[in-house]
Length: 576
Image 1: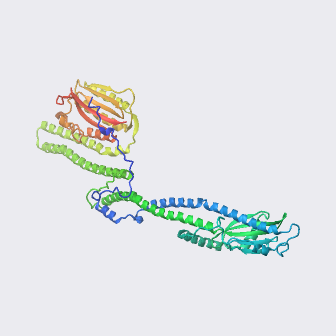
Image 2 (image 1 turned 60 degrees about the vertical axis):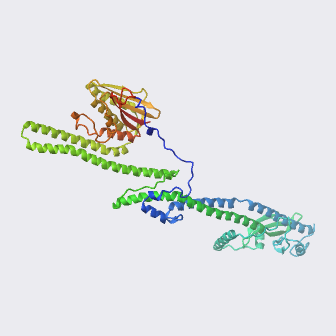
Image 3 (image 1 turned 180 degrees about the horizontal axis):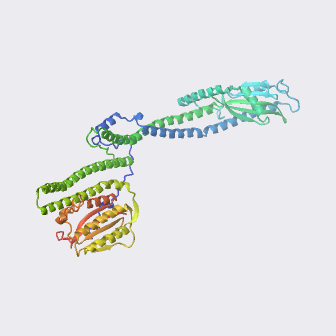
């Protein structure tokens, strides 16, 4: 019983996963010695920049660049420095227009009528000439009938500390290039729309007609050259009456230069980030796309070889299991699948050879018996030969049936759906049914099952087949007066089910062979009544459920392994 509860480590072994490393580039590549010649040639043709043959590489680069473009566009769009400068410049233009309007109002008579067009009450030309306008600033004066009565353009340099000084001009290649493209595109659309550019005088007239004549107005616009302009319009009042308007058009080159310089720096960083992103994307793609390409090409080589059937040798999947990521897991899984496939092929070949060998024995006996039957003349000899023939035919029928069941077992284990069921209830039902045959032979049948149910996930019918084989084997080896005990225990994450008997036990040399196909150790009187596949099928079913099965002898003391066995014990361990 002590041996029965020592389950191998395979039941509780957990696969270690390395998740703390980061792999860049082709640091983890299968050695050339472990891959096919065709795959090595494909690697030689493939370079780091093989974008035309790697859709995954193109997708990685595209998605990274899209993210970077969205980020840069957001920075350019959400930048508030231009808005701050524009507000300051608009306030300055408004103050300048109101100040000039105050100059005109100070010269107006208080009660006499004023006509700015004829010069009655005020000399517009002299007043305009006396104003000191900043360089580039344009002044337009309108009378009450919205006629232009005075105009001047400033040529005085900007004063330090006024905020009107322009920053030093620096080259902005990228911004100028993009601005030229934008102006060309917008110019084409403007021509298609038929929009005619308005002059300064027309813009001010529209502003006077559309706006509040008693309020100062400031608008921002762009010249044909793309330069930013701030237009301020302020009324000239004589008392409560509006006798004219002062329009000031002020260029904001300093804002354009500052914004262009800032945009140029952002775009320069964007270009550098784009190059870095492409480089890192290529490295990342080589880490992902190239190994996956190697695995796909290795699988495709195997498919082509199967189609042509001209090449020989086994297909070798690249060994990338050293990679601590999903590609390493994929490589290990594919290698395991290929290894399992070849093991299955080898097993089928060995199974076919064993079947041929096992079938030859009864066929040889039949051939000999039929040949002898033609020569013997005594009736008693003929009866013995007929008995031999009948026995061999039954043996062949049993052998073919067991072989058919064994050959279908793999596919049936894959197709059948696993379900949760009570293992103890199933064992108890089998024990009640099979215990009847044991008691007929004078064998004591004992069951020792826990009171609480043990639920497992698996194929109930297949596991029932395992315990039927074990119990019927125990019954067949026991005689009158022997005993069979079936017991189960739960051990942490597994359950042990044991079938033990007080029969002759198992020879030591057979302990490692009894689970092999077609191996049978039975008395000569029972020769030919068993195919030797029962325990092999049981082992296959248990292992398909992730469990283990083994056999051992029951001895009076564990210290003396040479003592005569008191019986045999079969142990089945299943995971919960």
